[in-house]
Length: 99
Figure 1 (cartoon, rainbow, N blue to C red):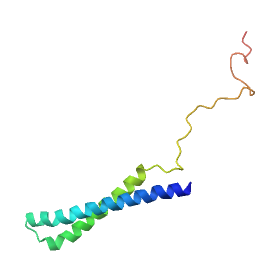
Figure 2 (figure 1 turned 90 degrees about the vertical axis):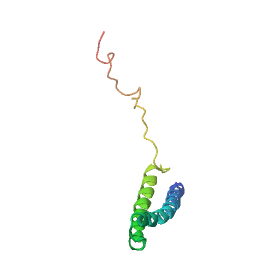
Figure 3 (figure 1 turned 60 degrees about the horizontal axis):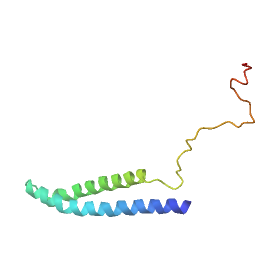
Figure 4 (figure 1 turned 180 degrees about the vertical axis):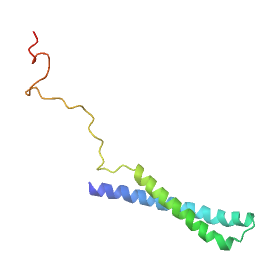
């Protein structure tokens, strides 16, 4: 059981890392172009903005995927009602002495 949980965690981490690298690549191109378009020097602010974007995206991706991935040890609760055994005392009209 522990191996299945480790595989699920590894899959979540791998997917989050690949998605974070893709977001970093897009942001690494888009942020300097945007800064140049608004008249700012891309060399001054792009590193700070790129770090902020990739940190927020990476944390959100990892925690979001981890929260939505069920682990094998997380079984659904048994929702069936408990039925008393027939050998125990019953609390019905027959046991109250109703005739």
